Image (cartoon, rainbow, N blue to C red):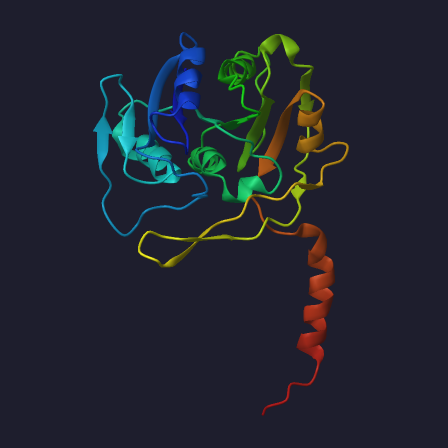
Length: 256
């Protein structure tokens, strides 16, 4: 099994290193990751310039681009041998609920899925203890399962792991995405040259964090596993919208 590892925190991040070390021996591993932190990059693809790839002494490859760039290049040009799957992470913080809209970690996984490969995004819900080894072991358990999992097209697993030792995990839960409340306001600051600047405010707390959500599973000490389908169509609104459009089509149109 050939596995492509990537992330959005950069090629030197401790989570990526822990993931590589935790998966050693499970198959042939290749690392292609951004040359710097690209948290919040979402699915951005660099189309305005060529990309530079550098191979490091430890065998990892870095790209001066986004997480999506990394997976796209790795699958579509850097290597002669094809990959069997993509694992993105271990992200240094949670990717719960609405976080996945912005997450470069999740984007790297979805790019792998767009290119036909099963993919997992994994994040550590960091509480300051940095138990990356726990998250890496979770991924290994998922990959070594005797029962192959078929999610269907355009689907990935979004995995969040509590920041605790392996022995303290309560287990695994299948969850739905919760929703965060409104983000905190932008934080103003003054740069050394006297100009006004702003930091983006912190993400909101869980606005929908009840039973069945990824937030609730983490709160109770469980690994959260959410199947994510990259189809943004709101299917339950189709019928209502169709009725509304029919009224537009049958109504009189003012030529003015």
